Amino acid sequence: MNRAIRITSLVALGVWLGLGPAGCSRHDKEARTDTQTQSQSGTAPQVQVSQIDLGRGVGSDKRVTDPTTEFRPNETIYATVQTNGNAPNATMTARWTYQDGQVVEETTQAVAPGSEATTEFHISKPDGWPAGKYKLEVLVNGTPAATKEFEVKTQS
Image (cartoon, rainbow, N blue to C red; front, side, top):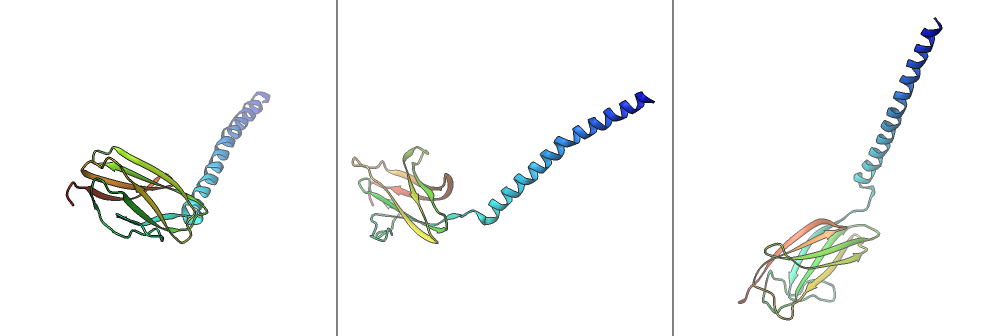
């Protein structure tokens, strides 16, 4: 009988030890899921790109003054990115690529948008852009947010 009590005690101890870690990990997993749900439910500030404009010039209000998607090789290419949302700070990256996906230039700016904000980017090449199709990809905090295609033509 003494031996039966020991076996029962060992089995009970084993069951208790086996369920302990599972209960803790399940609790930890639930806590992480709750935290992820809170951040995905909108409690974290969000910034979204609402519009990208390209052109040959930008005014003092950071808005494109001569909009176009066709440029000559010797022109400076301006982009204004309008955002909506609220965040204490964010980073916005303009990644300019040539037709084969080759990165021509990448610039990052720290921005602190209110409900609406406009950010200006531009690129130039003193010896002229090669003719072809290009793309501007805008990333917010490293995440792709919007793209705009344009072309450089020798005759415009």
